[in-house]
Amino acid sequence: MATFSPTLKQHQFFQTFGDETVLEILYGGAAGGGKSYVLWSMMIIKCLEYPGITVGLARNTLADIKKNTIASFYEVSINLGLVHTSYNYNSQEGKITFKNGSVIQFFELRYMPSDPNYDRFGGALLTFGCIEEAAGVPEKGKSIFQSRLGRWMNDEYNIMPQLFMTCNPGMNFLYSEFYRPWQKGELARHRTYIPALLSDNIYQSKHYKRNLELTLSEQDKSRLLEGQWDFDSDKARLIKYDTVLDIYNLSKYKSSGDYYISADIAFTGDKCIILLWQGLEIFKIYNYKGDEPEEEIIRIRDEYNVDPRKIVYDSDGVGKYLKGKLRMAYDFINNGVPINKENYSNIKSQVYFKLAELINMGLVKSRDTYLKEELIQEVYEIKSVPMETVEGKMSIIKKKEVVKNIGRSPDISDAMAYRMVFELKKKVGRSFFIG
Image: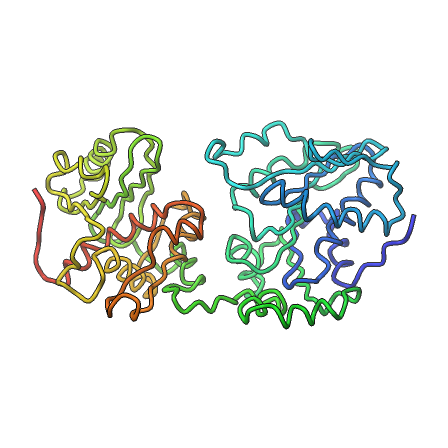
């Protein structure tokens, strides 16, 4: 078998295997840092070293592995001197089986509405795991996948149930749990981050770098060529990612104020988000899935003694049927006239701009971490439309654009924005109720 000659950064990655103090290892940053190569080298070498183990390899979709990642397997196996008869690749089952009984099993981490709790991983018995392009996977998928590690031959070989991940910079849990703490010198002891740039890979072609320089946008150059995590230069975005993350920073925050309820209404089959607030802090998030959302709102109202006039709900669509039971609540009409006739295209844009303003001021917080990843993603997607395109009126981008960007309706951020009507009404200086 040929000898594997890793780069300095790849060697650091290999050195973490078996380190009893480290359970999660993140490698990467820029494109061309040798991420795929080192990950496959790790899996193949360990499979050959420990007969009978099972390694989990995950990406967002199986298609990503089979169309893109598998090419690196063949490259590494050839360089390591493996012959085709020493392994069997079963594309249909998504696994590679070696002659000694070791297996590399593929997993898909994308969110599936039909399997929101990732029950499809229930029978997985894995020794250790790897996630390629972890910036593109949901945090819950990563967590459930990780929970299946350490279940196969770990005691026999004294192998730690470690999770190895590679990535390019991205705005998801990798930023909040790895890069940001690493940058501050506060990375959790059970985690390691190894930044790797194209310049760290002595084997990369000089033509690849030139190609990146000529073809990438300035934002993508910052992210993929320079490995910058704070790469987002989208001027339409109303809130920076760091600021969104601070919604969950309660270190210097004291709960105060009256209780409020804001709800994005849906009936059976759709997600109905109900938020209970104390002042400007989200006290509790409810993901109601029944067919009587008004009864759930009333139940929460009565449990927390919420003033009926401090309830707001989306009255467009199915929400219009709730007015009879929520007579004193504010029935929010998304395309309605802005409060005090301010210079917005509609009231929905007005409340979203107000939400962004208060988040940027550090005044909006959440104590409940349920649906945290979804909330962060939705709030980060709050963007404005250039004023010249909407006749001088301030406006946020259309909902269909947000759906296209995140793959679902922004129900949580909508419910958060509806809460802002009460802040805007304070500005007007009069009390109100709808009954």
